[in-house]
Length: 464
Image (cartoon, rainbow, N blue to C red):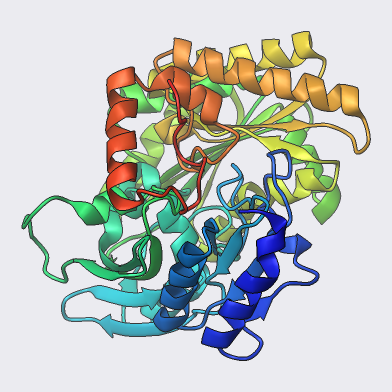
């Protein structure tokens, strides 16, 4: 599509959509998600959908004009999955915020794609229910975006990721038709798992407008936090490996290194222990004596691995305060400069070695790399910081980014655990996926989107 087509496209959209739903001016903020490092361009138009009909009309009209469609939620993605290209229509679902149904007896909810993760959790809690997936961005990320990237979170080590809770969805396909996928029953294997296929597809196979989500009972858990301060990142990694090696599955096991800790402490006016190089935050939620015993075992592993200060927390407010440090790490670092965010996942036993390799890469590339991690499942988030306006530092950061991906793969890992491939991870995905697997990806894409207009160039590389 050329830029000369844009006025006709915008006019056609305005004819079919409600007043105020189509934006063509001041749309730069819709050009990219939080992955500013990835390529992006100003879109031809932005549609602020409020209904399924709006989404259908947008996809249909864009197809008639040969325009790419880029689905978007809150724009909190970190891999460029919602980045626009020239001539594209950004289909924003941020205004589709209805919680359509909560069925407490069958333990599911039907929600529109723009519902915020935290809002859903609060709403279903009123029904005695719980939606476990809890990305660190839960206060600002949408369910649709979580589905697009198969988001994880702090408690996914025990309770699973988004895909584990998606029972069904309504999807607008590339030709503007509507497919209602999945079920509301506890079990069901009729046909291919098309619902599972859509989860993590980053808007390249269809536009998800609502989702049916499995819920858990809210009660029956007693949170106990174990906090371990360590004088080295390697010691913290060894503690993670020891907990995993013992077969313990905590409700959360999070790592925060000294760079992140200092950024959060400076921002929130907190005081850190002297010589703290890393913090491990574990949570167990088994009730009663079993929970007590499990917390004791985790604390013992922390101490044996060199934890210089190991503490326990029982009160809910105290547990939440401790884990707030983990959730604040990324925004705290953003205050220091642009952050290039990694999302590698290695076998749990390889966490200490991967952390050591990241430290070496930081030294050799002469960049600042902070580390936060869902350490309990091997999902590491090295955060590479480059000062504003320092192009040389930005180039070194990109080199470090690519080296971290290579080292992850060398340890048997995968290039993205929960943020998605987007644009930033395309080279890593090309190295990870075999030619046969890439051909399967292409076959699925061609079958569902033969013209390649749904979020083109994302999620998987065009060539191996």
